[in-house]
Image 1 (cartoon, rainbow, N blue to C red):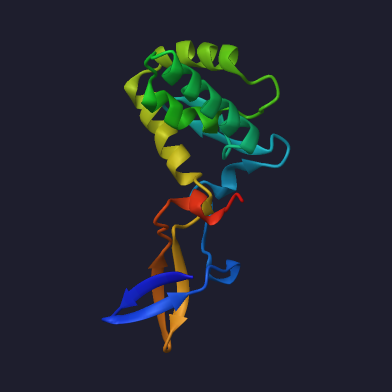
Image 2 (spheres, rainbow, N blue to C red):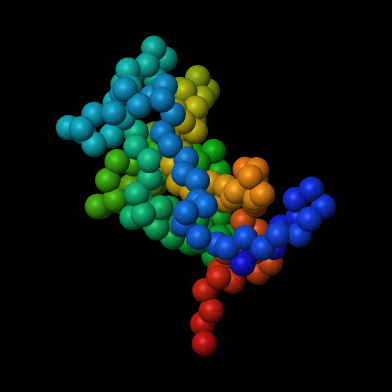
Length: 159
C-alpha cells in the first residue's frame, strides 16, 4: 500500500497494475515507424536520415555496464552522449564497450544542431510507465506519486 494525502485526507492506495499509466510514443513521430527496419526512420534537414528506436533491455544493460566500468576506473564520460546512445543503437547483439567507444568518437564529430535534433527525437520516443498512479477516489481522479521510502528496490524483499 502507498500512503497518500489528498485534500487533507489520508488514503491508502494499492500498488496495482490497473492504476499504472504508460508513456506512449509521441504521435508526431509515430508515422515514421518502419516495420521493415523495426525502428523509426526519419529524414531530417540538418542530420540526414536518422534511424532510432526506444532502447531495448539488452542495450540498456550494456550502457549500464559501461557507466559502471567508467565509474570504477574513475574515468569521465559524456553524459549528453549517453542520454541518446540507447536510442541510436538499434541492436544489442555485438553491442559493448568497443562499439560504445566507436559511437562516442562519431558523436564527437556531430555539430550542435544534429545533437539537438536527435536529442529531441529521443525525448519523443520515451516509453514506459509513468511515475504516478491514476486512482479514483470518491468519484475524483487522483494522481498518486509512486514514492517508496527505500526506493523501488524496497519492493523486493530478500529473506
